[in-house]
Length: 159
Ligand SMILES: Nc1ncnc2c1ncn2[C@@H]1O[C@H](COP(=O)(O)OP(=O)(O)O)[C@@H](O)[C@H]1O
Ligand SMILES: [Mg+2]
Image (cartoon, rainbow, N blue to C red; front, top):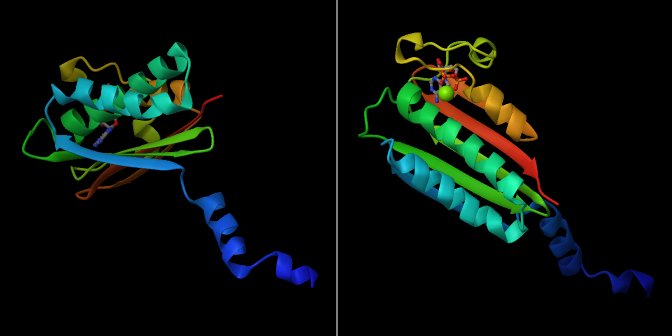
């Protein structure tokens, strides 16, 4: 009875573990600039179980800072009476970080992601936020809809 060696239950578990993250967390906080450092430290603490190098941790913190700053100043236009949502998952040696707001949204994502582009030059923005996220993380996906909000998903392989 060779087929008896693989029970449906065991096959189910194998299938699930291939798709399900090893660990997940989510956090929500008010869109106040003082929460940027909280968000950065929070994600870094979660990432610590991957035993990242100091350089990897610095990259992750910088990318999270940029995404959270954007949610606060662009997404919510500094109206602190709104929440920024972060979700992180670790699967194998990879961390996936989602930073989401329910703010104004981005009308032209391609243009927004161009180096040096900023819609707020009067605030002396560098327009390098997305470029930094893309430089410090392996991959950055952007979902956005005008009037609905923006979700940035960033991937980084550690090890
Ligand atoms: N969460 C967001 N909600 C709305 N617009 C955004 C968001 N994130 C980025 N943007 C838009 O993308 C542009 C580029 O972002 P970025 O590269 O970080 O430069 P900067 O923040 O210096 O303007 C911003 O000027 C803004 O128009
Ligand atoms: Mg920015």
